[in-house]
Length: 310
Image (cartoon, rainbow, N blue to C red):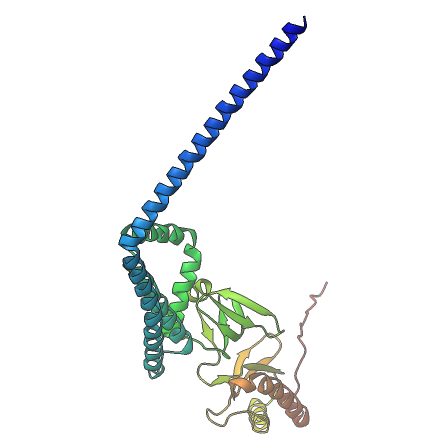
């Protein structure tokens, strides 16, 4: 029994030894193979660098120089374009900024394509993919592109500028900011409203500040028994004392409509755009006070009722 146990232990030991030797041999073989593959790859990389390293360094340096020198050239081109546009009377700051931005981005795109070509990159598929991407983005951002195109039309035609009081896109207010995508207005009650340029250019634009002066339209009613010549003279004399009323064009005061219970007189002085509301309220007050001094009645609405005999 003891001999059998000893023999079994010996057999087990031999089996473990053989397994360890086999595993060790496989490990050594794997390590040797990987080392050989690594040496081959290193040798291949070394050979490639030896054969092409100089060309790669030259191309990389050339690409960097192209970008550096080209960047300086782009700055010079943009500065020259801006200086040239600043001499044109019909080109405002918005259009100058837009044109300079387009010139700058176009030049930089050309520089990058040239630099990539110098590095050996095939730029043909890249340009083609950019074209397809541009079409896709064009459909995705068609409304934004529409506002951009409208901004370009506003910049070319400049129907208004910053500081003008306008009605555009259904919104009334003073222009406080203007860019290629939107027009920002401040309303009379100090609300900031941003209107896309597509809405601005796609509708009628009313510019109250473009011509420098505005007519102030007011209407005053007098009783039917009033001496109209006296009323017109009193109103005209009152306007002459209102601050801000322009002498040229001269104020217009004339009989208007024959209403149901009164005769209306149109009172129309002229004022600078900045003085519009001052003249508006001043004219109303001055005419009312003048009529009171002259004993001219401003009647309330009246209705006469005639009763038939029962």
